[in-house]
Length: 448
Image (cartoon, rainbow, N blue to C red):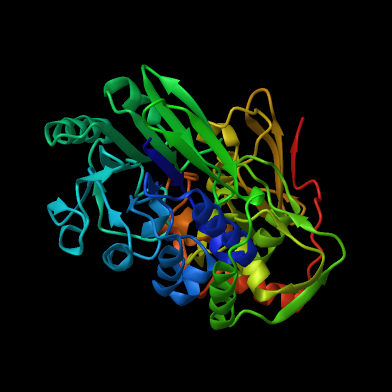
């Protein structure tokens, strides 16, 4: 029997020592000579550990996880292309990519990145290749001079090459939302997915597709011969103490152990985009507006991580874990008309979210009312006054929202009048020190 053990989107597990210890323990128990351990991207970043410690953060974790093959996710480029190359070069895993390009050639060609690999496992030749979302530039916090080719075309070509090379089974590591298109266009045996939710497994045209939960919450185990899949919850496995110890040491090295406030009630972090107004979203949006000394602040759901900030003493690390990106606050100068357009684009349906009542983010300093059925703003105020289309307003946003039109296209870098030196997570920590931590849902974003 030849088995695949797959995780993906580890991201915030690097900031939770006990959860990481369970992931290590799960792999320890399920790994054997008949198994390949694969990662489907976003296994370098984002995390506070990575943001503060650089490549040493993910390399410490990957050394303990000891994967066989990995591919790249969009957030693996948050810290730039050289960061991703360095981790790929020094990681115990072989990194594969069939559709990433840089400087006119395969990305990472000089750093051990392969287009595809064949591994002999328990008498089976297993071919593995990887593809990354074609929206890479739009969904990466940093700017990396890396481009993508069409992942479906790349998958067809890589499968053909692997079959020609003698692979008995072909596995695609797909860090993208369109896994089904690859299943329909190829004869690969297994697609190990990442990047999007929800987790689960299915079969399309004879191809098995699996996607585990992000943040190391689950792994998938697949029997390549039968196609049988098992979705393991890592909480069911013993903690590997060496994983806990390694990440606790990393947390100490990050220098974020200071207590910055107290919480009477825990703050939940939404587990999906489009969750609407939330306590954590309001708190971060307030910190962004305060940090930019702006009229209005906006922060997006896609920039939130983790699941809960526990009641009691709250450390700088706890807050940074909710927004573990390298984004710096940018202040834009915009007309009232374009501010209104930007607020309108926070309608989750602009990003394809199905719920007509979804908002993709939170606001500070403003209040918006939307006709949910029509998807139109019917009222928008700043500081209690109606937005005047002819007036100028200062708008503070994370750098990602300014540099990319993936979420908001109405405003952008051309409107930037100030770029602060501090990251969003540093502003959040400073805001907590100054004002405490007691966010509420205040009907800033309403439907009627």
